[in-house]
Length: 172
View (tube, helix red, strand yellow):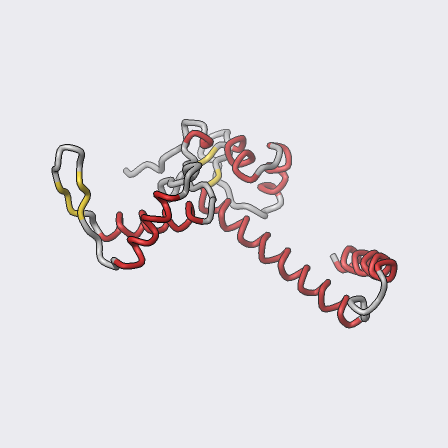
């Protein structure tokens, strides 16, 4: 029977930050622009090993993320996290995470007496939340335009924003 990997280390140690000097990463990005096919990995002793297409694709993605100055994390699909690890990943407290789990906002399993959360479910939750926030911002921007706030004074904007927030909170 196959087992799903469970996190056993601090995930902050697995996060890879871009180097302080991005010149080497930018050189790699430029290299990838000119080469669509995987190449070879050259060892310090001159040994050459062909890169599988999948590894080449992951390497391109990592370089792209680092060129943006962002950190990256590579984790096995299906990785199960403890509630504390999941809370740390989302940047929320453990009690807040547990509330999200219990309300069904994030899927979880309970193989024994402890809850486990799939990393993929956390990423999907983050994506849904990002989309919801984007939709709300778009609606607020549209309402502000309809109310002529872009033509008014800052005081008009503050009053209208408070009104829109009240309407939004009553819609829930």
